[in-house]
Image 1 (tube, rainbow, N blue to C red):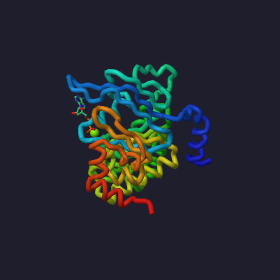
Image 2 (cartoon, rainbow, N blue to C red):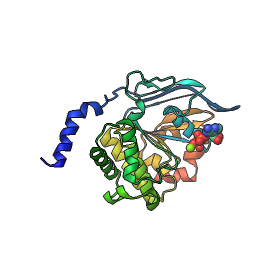
Image 3 (spheres, rainbow, N blue to C red):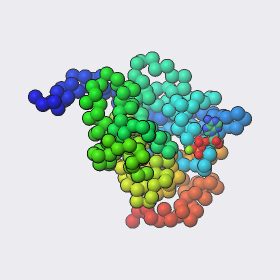
Image 4 (cartoon, rainbow, N blue to C red):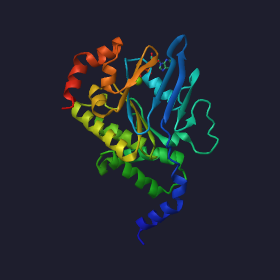
Length: 281
Ligand SMILES: Nc1ncnc2c1ncn2[C@@H]1O[C@H](COP(=O)(O)OP(=O)(O)O)[C@@H](O)[C@H]1O
Ligand SMILES: [Mg+2]
């Protein structure tokens, strides 16, 4: 028996410990009546949103409308003043994790700006969540999983041992994605993943996101202002304005709306250009 066979048997023996139950409900993310406020400044006021299982939901809105704060609330990094949030059927607000499964291990996050640990290699970065949530995992198995996630994210194998400073912007995003996928999440949060990428790199990243969503059965909460991303890979788009999600729907459904920001965004010169580029024949 080779070392690798050993590895496989180990996985099979312990497999049940590592495979959490899949959520089969209709809405992996539910936000109801959310209020967020910093000082006197209210960011969200009675905001509600439901994300459907298996979809890529694009989240758009002007700069500073609270897209990132919404994402941070959903993943429990920002305690809202009021409201109810559920992810994969579990309450995030006031959650105590009573049944032992840490819900944070069921989602992956790519933060705005990427935020890789600069003193760790790409592979080591991907190992971080594995160490955090599965400390009992054997070293070589953990490294093998990390290497697989690096490849899955479209990076060459050599990238595993590189440091973030040695990578291009697009490769850093992929490394961040590999880390977000480390735990085989059911939900993926991406905060402006294509910001700062050139159009070719951005389009490739978009395709990768769509492919992984479909093959891994992910549900994706994708903050972006990239009109190409919205048109090419998003199933629906949620619009943040006036402290709420003012509309959710497909792009044609949104274009039909009367709100000034939506009209400007999808009907302005950039919106029209993107729209004609993706027009279905
Ligand atoms: N921790 C914080 N403390 C105070 N103000 C904050 C904090 N986080 C975000 N804000 C403010 O909330 C607003 C929304 O921020 P953000 O969600 O980052 O906007 P965006 O839609 O561009 O992602 C901004 O005005 C921002 O300055
Ligand atoms: Mg933001």
